[in-house]
Image (cartoon, rainbow, N blue to C red; front, top):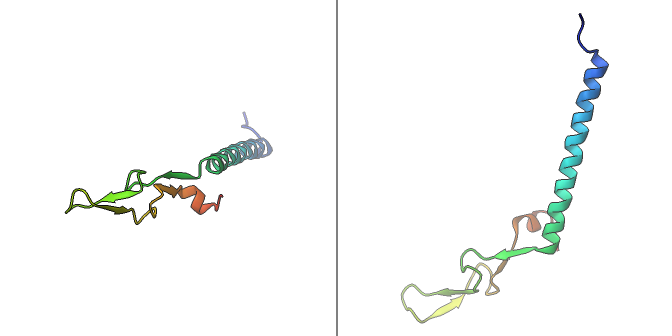
Length: 84
């Protein structure tokens, strides 16, 4: 009894690799669409308020240096893929 031929095995591998590649392209396209729709996230340092409270004086505050007072920072994927 012989196993499957080498051509059958290669065809199966090619089919699996094609399916993985198509799935990866679909996921990448949907992630890029998500970045296009929502390119910004809340700043972690000021929690999206845009201001930082002083540790020494309770009533004084200044603008957050990370987000320059906007409260938003670009998502990592938006920076890497240059999505605007």
